[in-house]
Image (cartoon, rainbow, N blue to C red; front, side, top):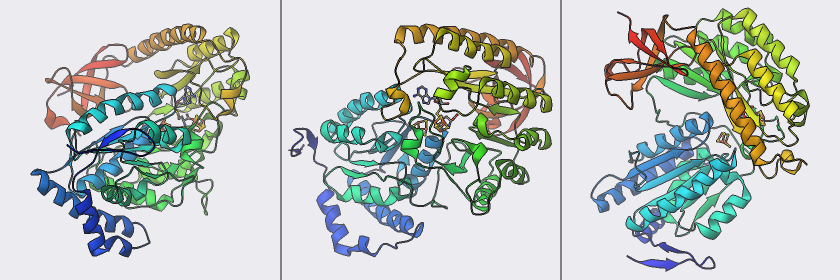
Length: 501
Ligand code: SAH
Ligand code: SF4
Ligand code: F3S
């Protein structure tokens, strides 16, 4: 196996075979220069070119090339990964879950330090695989790549990575991938901001019966602890007609459940040329034939309108579940977090929601140990948890993100103190969630079956409209169907059920 030293870094990497031939192929037809300037035509052009290269490599390998796309982080990233997988499978890759594949891409998250560290750890393992497979290429994209210090570190110490791109140029993946095949060096393209929204690129859905749908990109809120606005850019909404067209196509293709995605869906449409509200988009979505469930994520309490609260009661297929991140129950901390609401406003919203839809499920995100959080502040958070009685909650230890205002605030909380509060919060959240879940035991409710149970193949796993998980006896033929299930036993955060005849 040939190895070469990369100048300046001192790192060694395996020189890939075929690159020279591929470059010659590229030069020979001088093809790439004739690429159309406009998207999505440009992407389709590069997909065609890449397809030929991939076929050539597969012939040399003697079997199809395999790809593995690993997603870290939120639903936005999950959706982006489906788009990448869509392109990869169309250009001839066989999708696999094994990271010992010919092309491995990590779609990264940087919302908390531990999300970030996971990637570095796993890259070491990938390097080992790459040494054994001279065909292998490694790519990184997503939120971490938007941070200059991350790209610097990768250039310095992870020179075996072949391609790096960010969140704003995901639509250029086919082109970047093709150019990576022809390049001897790490190819890096990270843009500062979004240039355009490109519609109609291929996707490969993880589930045949449900799908995420981006309705907006970016975030304008600058909560003081949060890195997302820096790595995802300013908020832009897609045109409603494009969204509805996408969902209509999904419904025709057998999708029963859509999840409308945005960092703050409640401000959807405000900046469009002809402004529309999120509630009106939901009403239009609810009219689409074949759809049975509509979910959405995430709602910022500061923008939750009465109009939206009414939609739950008005439209049957909008699921009675709202994820309404609290972050903290202390008005003093909420102000420091730049959340633009206080404890009282939040509690009023909950009261109004429950007046309209008494059985609505409420879930939330809470951060413990924000700079300056006192025991009193923390007790305010516990108080909201006790009053609202969430169906479930994601709890996070505050993680300092360099570049955000909170990172330079005084009184960063000691880890011990934050951890102790975290445990108390977790205990309250779990106790209340289990008590809440109990109320549905004995009822027969529709379950959308998602998969065969991972531990016990005689069971399938699905979700209620309120998003709670149910396991019940059944086989794979039920996957994608909505069936009535009697919830025989509540196990805290999930149910065991039996199929209702
Ligand atoms: N746009 C969504 C949240 C996206 S990030 C919203 O505003 O609700 C998902 C969750 O990660 C946030 O709700 C928050 O609870 C948590 N989070 C974000 N930054 C964090 C940080 N620096 N430390 C700990 N948790 C954080
Ligand atoms: Fe982050 Fe706040 Fe934007 Fe959510 S709304 S992504 S927490 S800045
Ligand atoms: Fe993470 Fe980016 Fe989502 S930072 S939470 S993947 S928007």
